[in-house]
Structure formats: structure tokens, C-alpha cells
Amino acid sequence: MLGEGIVKGLAETARNFFGSYVEKDRLTTVQFPEERLPQAEAARVFPFLVYDTDDMEKGLRCVACKICEVECPPRCITIEKSTEKKPDFTGKPQFYPEKFEIDVSVCMSCQICVEVCPFEAIKMDTAFELSTDDRFGGLRWEKERLAKPNEYYRQIHPMEAAEVDEQLAEKKAKAEEKHAPAAATAEGAATR
Amino acid sequence: MTQGLDQIFVTFQHWAVAHSPAAVQPAVSIVLPVAGILILFPSLFAITTVLERKGLARIQNRYGPNRVGPYGWLQPVADAVKSLTKEDIVPRTADKLVHFLAPVLLVTVVFLEYAVIPVGRNMVLADMNSGVLFFFAAGAATEMSVFMAGWSSRNKYSLLGAMRAVAQMISYEAPLILSSIAVVMAAGSLSTVTIVEKQAGYSGFWPHWYVLTPWGLAGFVLFAIAMTAESNRSPFDLPEGESEIIAGYFTEYSGFKFALFFLGEYLEMFAVSGMAVTLFLGGWAAPFSFLTWIPSWIWFLGKVMTLIAVFIWVRGTLPRLRMDQLMNFAWKFMLPMTLMVIFSAGLWKFLPSGVLRWLICAAPIALLYVVLGRVLQSERRIEKRVYRYAE
Image (cartoon, rainbow over all chains, first blue to last red; front, side):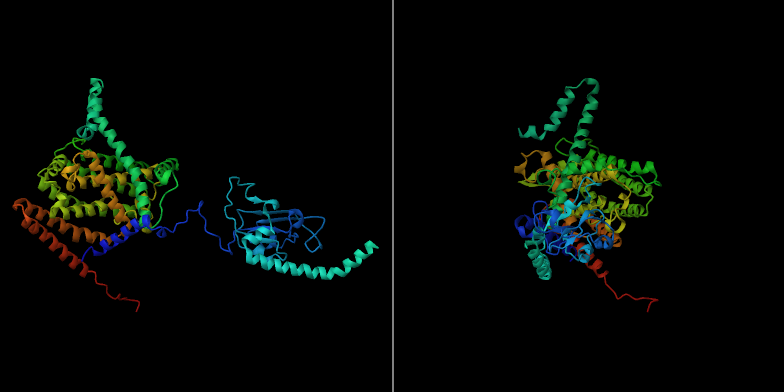
């Protein structure tokens, strides 16, 4: 019969219309700024620099090797190497970045900097509300703004962070083993 | 009290005229009701846009606009500010004068249609002897504005949209006017005021609306379909067809001109809804005799808003038609049906009232509906496609 389908369709939409006021399950919309979905473990937006301990200057893992600066496809990273060295987490003296800047507007979230970093110093952040009204200074993030503690990394990517922590601990233990006799003799010499 | 509330606007007009200097009295008596129309219907448009977005959202199990103001009710204000502050872009090769005139003409012409719609008892701007004729004549001018918009834009999509609009609107004008002829026959008058007055009586508590007769019901449904097409509403929104021709004749319009087109389209919708209410649903008359204490203008606006709600419901349900489906529907289904409705209305006038009259008048319409349905659906056989050269 002509028009049968139209009546069926109208009944269906009417059911949807009234149903959306009765059953809350029908409305799947998440009202964003007030409600938020938990982010996926693998979520990635923009890189940040990891530092150990509480002191950002001292604990920064980055040794200013500039691999990420070179590998970055849109070339959004700028690094200036320091002149003097400071000890890293194993106690070995290393350079550190005098200046470390990433341009938020240029970064394309490809994660290549993270993959090429041999020091586990740069990781992907999950914070995504990065908009600013200052398009010159506000989009060029300095070292101070990029640096975030390892605790934060553990929070946003717990599984990945555990793996990294394990690797670093192993490395540190190996380094200590290697340096232990030397250090002991040195200490002995100093006390003597 | 009831009488006072019913006639409150009329009383106010008389009061204002009596208290103004004699020299401007004719002007005041004309300008006041015009100002009423100019305020009432655009504000109704503002409410309808947010209602439509909310209604469509609920049909699709969403919330709809709920950010601006409490429950999103101030959304039209935000929309208005946005469209007023937007840059007005006119294509370099466009015919600038016609491009500017098209939206202005549309809104002007649509406002003209309101002159003959009785909004309440004694509330009509111009009680013409040929009100229905004037309404459709003014309505036909919207086609010109649409074509002006499409032609002056110098854009192939605009032109395609305008061609589609003209083809569609002229095709559907025939069933629109033919289905209203049945009412004109029954009322014996082209004056909208007389048509409403003929429907304002009651047998017991039951009203004398034309929609409550078999030919009136069929005529009303046909009129509703034709007016949906006439006001370019979904599922007959081919002239706009966002997915096919971007926005049809709107493509090159932005800012306030686009808002004017939008306003004109909604005003057209209110006008044809008002006409449908006037012709078939008793205009400002209450649905039952015991509800006559509610002011007549509330009944009229309530009926118009109900029709608008049905429009929104249909828009949320049906997908857009194809051009050939549209034309086939107009000429092969709507036209024969409206002719049969006129025939049935003629039968109704000359037969004595009773159950038998009902059956005799309903039978030819129902029969034609079934036959047309069968015939049109049998034409729709899907055959295996034969490739002539690519075998």
C-alpha cells in the first residue's frame, strides 16, 4: 500500500523523540566540558620532557643529543646544547639542553621524537586543550613548560612508564656495577 | 473578560487610533497591524529555529543546542549576532543588483501573503474578496526571487538549484491550488474571512472544519504535501540539496543576506501553514464548542505551531527525493488525487447529509488512492542493467 513505509518511519522517529526524554540510555552524547571520557592509554597529543626527582634542572633526562631535532619531520624542535656538563641519573657527566623549545602549532604529533630518543627523555603527553590567545609566545613552549615529572608520566601511561622505569633501573644497576669498584677505590683514596 | 482577551489587539488598535491626531489616524490604523505581523512572525521564526534543532536532535537521540542560555533557548540570539557580524561576500562576476534584490524580494513577497491570513476573530489585515487568489499570486512570486538568486550568483550550483526550485515549485503549485479549490467550492467564497466563518459553527460540540469531511481530509493531506514542496522543506529540499549541489541558490549568499533567505523560507512555511489552517482546520475557531473561551488568536497560533511540528517531524523522518521521483509524484499522483478531491467535494455539496454521503464521497478518493498506488509501484520494476558497449 502506498505510504505504508512513511507511516512506519514516522512511528520510528516518534518513538526516538519521546524515548529520548524517558530513557537516558538513548542519549549517548558526552557533554564535553562538564563530562569527560577517560582517555585511552595510547592517547598522544604533544611531547613533553621527562625529569626524575623533584628538581627539574637537575633531573632532566635530556642530554641535548639533538637526534629528535634532526629527525622531527616538520622541524618544530629547537635545542641549544650547554657548554658544561652535569651528572645524569647514573652519575655520568652529560651535556644538558640550555634551551629546548617545541612549536605547538607546527608539531604534528607523529611521535618520531619519542621513538628516536635513546635516553627515554621525551614522551607523548595526553593533555589536548592547548589553545591560547597569544599566537607568538603562547605557541612556542619553553623547556620549563615542557618538563614534567616522571610521576606524571606514570599517571598518564602507566604500562609504558613501568617498562621504561624497569629499563632505566637495569641500566643504572649495570652502570653502578661497572663504576662500583672504581668508585670504591676512589672513595678509599679520598678517605685515606 | 473572555471577549476582551479575544479582541485585545483589536481593542488596542481602536484605542491607539482614537488617541492619535486626526491627520495620522488612517496611517496608524494601517501601520499598527502591519507592525504586529512584522514582530509576531519573525519572533515565531526565532523560536521555531531552536525548536526545530532541538526536535531533530531528539529524533536522532541527541540533545541539540543547550549551551546558549537556559536549555539553549537563547540560541537564536547567538545565531542573529553571528549572521549580522559575518562578512557579506558577493562574487566578483555576480549581477550585484539582482544578487542583492533576491533576498529582499523574497521576504517582501512572503510578508505580503500575511495580509489575507486571519490570525484571529476580526484580526485580518485586508479582508479581500479574492483573498485565496491573492495569497497564491503572492506566493508564486517567491519562485522569481529564488531564480533571481540562482541566476545572479553566476555559479553553476546556484543555477542548478534555481532551476530545480522553479521546476519543483511550479509543479507543486498545481496540486496546491487545486486542493484549495475544493474548499473554495464548499465555502462559496474566495475570502479567507468567510471561509473561516463557515467553519466556525458547531453541531453539538463537533466543529464544522473541512478537514472532518472525506474530501477535506484528503485535500488537507495533499495540501500539506504540496506546501512542503512549495516552501522547499525536506523531503522536497532538492533546490538546496546540500549533498548534491552544495546549497543550491544559497551557495553564494553569506551573512545577513543568507539570514534573510532563511527568514523568508520560514516565513513562507508559516504563511502556507496559516493558509492550510485557514482552509481546512477552521482558522481561529476552537476545535470544540466548550473551548471557545480560549482567545481565537491562541487557537490560530497553536494550530500553526502544530503544523510546524509535523513539518519538523517529517523532516526528521524522510530522506530527500530524487528529481524524477519528485516530478512523477507531482504529476502522476498529486494531480489526479486533487482532481478527484474536487469531484468528491462536488458530490458532497449535492448529496443529503448522513453516513451514506460520507461513504459515497470517501469511496472514489480511496479507490483512486489504491489504484494509483498499485500502478505507480508496478512501474518501479528493477531490471538487470544491460551494457550495450562494455560487454
